[in-house]
Image 1 (cartoon, chains in turn purple, blue):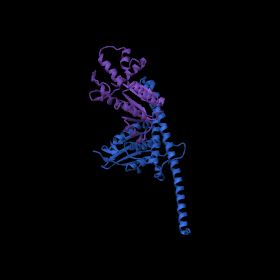
Image 2 (cartoon, helix red, strand yellow):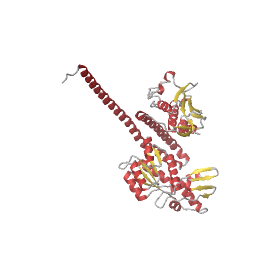
Image 3 (cartoon, each protein chain N blue to C red):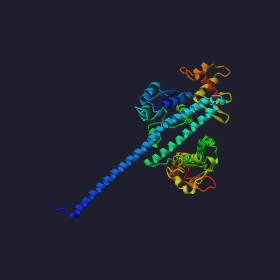
Image 4 (spheres, rainbow over the protein chains, first blue to last red):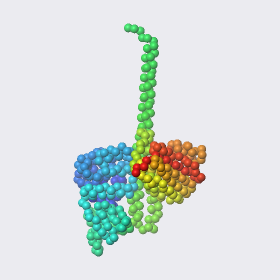
Length: 205
Length: 266
């Protein structure tokens, strides 16, 4: 799933891109409003995270232009502007969510997962059947897995890894296979990234 | 041409003087409003500008924490402890900015309520959870006697800010008592929350003054620093919500009672 991330503060943008990549999204970055619109046209993302105060075209202008081109694409505003009127304007021009700075990573992840679920339900991305791995039932559309009464929250990447493992029960998978299936062929994480992710996923499930 | 009547001349000069005075007052009033508005706008702008670096501090602390999760426990224990302090301090700074912005908003255009249906006890639990690491560090044991479990119409942001300001005070000024007791109760029309501690308490002569903006109980630099706006904002917000924040009698430490007008929504 591809996300357009438009934010003029380099550190915020790079940090958020890292969070999105860890979650399993392909993050396309833009540092100003006109670059955001160029990326939107060229890359056709599944949803957009947009700062408001950007040089050149501000986030509101970018949001309007994106809405004209695609009335259904989810748009999340990420901004230091926290006045009620800022949020009202954001929602009126078509934002789906509004995250106020300063935020924690967990909050951003929870909101992005919620938008992803809505994207899937709205048919923006293909829906997937639930599947079982051991005693765990994984529901990819909800980014959740259940074991008995317990529900576990999953990222897109977790779902990808579990799906690959479920499809290859009893087989040994090498690192390259897991990387290309779950990280994509253009991404070159080191082996430690994979080990760490698998180790964290194992702990959680 | 008839000569001007002296009475009319006096009347004309009186009107001219009144108009001149009016213009002068209008000029000074406009200048005063412009300066006040510039002051508030400056505070607003600075507070907003602080939010981006603060976001980066919090976000990179969170990212570092998730990196540390992947390290062996014996190696990551100390850095994790230090990271927790960075996270707590940045949260403290967030709360401070929140208070400054509330005050600026109040001075500029007054505050308005945004009530929604919520359970007060859930909000209290959430805020207590936010404070858990800080209270643990100060060795303050928190207890909560829940009695406001009905779904009511309440401005959650306002309630959170009131609680945050009261709990912050316990963390800053009353940690020596080692106790934070929170209790809630509800009627069909209102909710009451009591926040008590076993710290040094508030001297009688300062009972009213502590609710004044920028009032600090001690001017000594060695004492814990604060801005002195927390309680005044808490009271202002509670009054906006049809209630109040009051210092109530207690056998030890300080005890604050928050009352809010809340209507059952179910």
